[in-house]
Image 1 (spheres, rainbow, N blue to C red):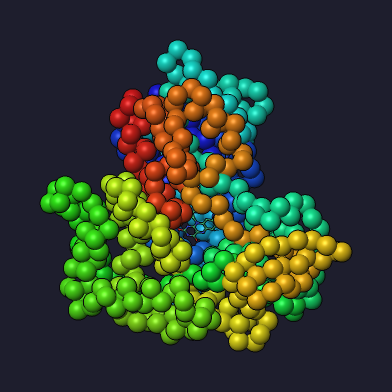
Image 2: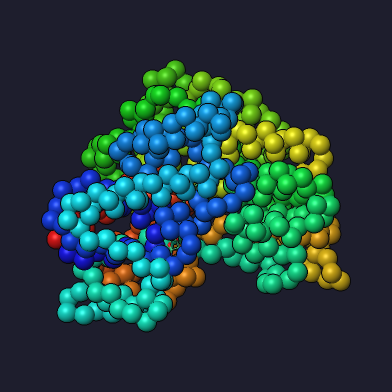
Length: 473
Ligand SMILES: Cc1cc2nc3c(=O)[nH]c(=O)nc-3n(C[C@H](O)[C@H](O)[C@H](O)COP(=O)(O)OP(=O)(O)OC[C@H]3O[C@@H](n4cnc5c(N)ncnc54)[C@H](O)[C@@H]3O)c2cc1C
């Protein structure tokens, strides 16, 4: 059995770790990764210390069935990175990259000890062809690698240039690594950040950490900021689980939003809470003044109520499963509230929330909603939003592509796999396997919800892929 893993980021690490822990007939694994950031992908590559992981340790474990795996690796190192409001360590993402490297190296050592051959090829896979029941992967250096099973772990799409600013001087089209992107930003310049999600938060806190003195504007359609993480609690959901969704299906013959809400209502009732309170708060997210809401969210970090915590966890663990069972009309109901759902599912860490609030309060940072246009004229940008037209010296694109977007680096490969009939494109984006030899892991996997994958989701998919690959041998 020859396995080709295309892409060497976190998804590949989760897969290798799971493969090393399964028992099966040893074969060969080849990992293809062209970048310098082997095992880290773009998110966890070397960058500024202000670029932090976005989640507490319990949900950063790349081993899907061991919540303590990452926390144990971090050990005493974590104390230097304690987020006091969260009560948990939040390390620079590059430090998390070391954990991924460590985990991958251990998995490879284990696989080799068990008789596997493991190779890493530092080249992109650009094409695929069928050959005697197997798949020939063509790398950028023109070589062919014939494999039996392919795991496509190429990550998410490339940021879209919404205002066609191209290579205009002062426009940063792709923010990561921020160490490079912000290097040329003059400290007194007027900066507009496009977007108000987690990437925009990274940009703002990193500008501040570099001592930026100029005005910073957060330009977006709605002005909505990510919610703020609350202190983790030990309680695990008992109703809002994959088994809970299975029971709904068995009972009602279908899964609906109301059925899922029923699970959440039962979960909250057990804790003495009312779902209607949560719904009222979430409805207000669309109309609340963003800075006032941020302030309230910071005040609620230690709030013991479980409601928002349950929703956050479920959006990464139960939602990917439930989404596939929802009829299209029910998916449309959720898509209509996608902005709020994303901001709850992927909150910002307290240390960043507090920094943002300080910057808002000082007047250096301002939210600008109703983004309309950005043009470059006479050496400056004009940024048009609901409050009119304003100039900017620098514009940083912090809008992430939606899940299902094909990364530019894998476009030709995806065309080839679809052309071979091994993969099928999905109408809502992404691709799915159309052949038992292909497995799609991470954001490129089609048919899933609109929330981008996080480490727990990727770890779970990696483990499922390891089992499927071994079952095929
Ligand atoms: C900026 C950012 C920060 C994030 N922070 C967090 C966080 O703190 N917590 C959390 O839970 N989730 C976070 N996420 C979400 C998730 O954890 C990451 O997106 C995760 O790294 C995805 O892993 P991946 O392996 O699917 O993709 P990636 O990490 O992007 O890795 C894909 C790899 O595939 C390679 N590749 C691409 N094309 C080819 C090709 N043709 N041939 C060979 N190789 C190829 C790329 O070079 C890359 O190394 C973050 C996401 C982003 C974008």
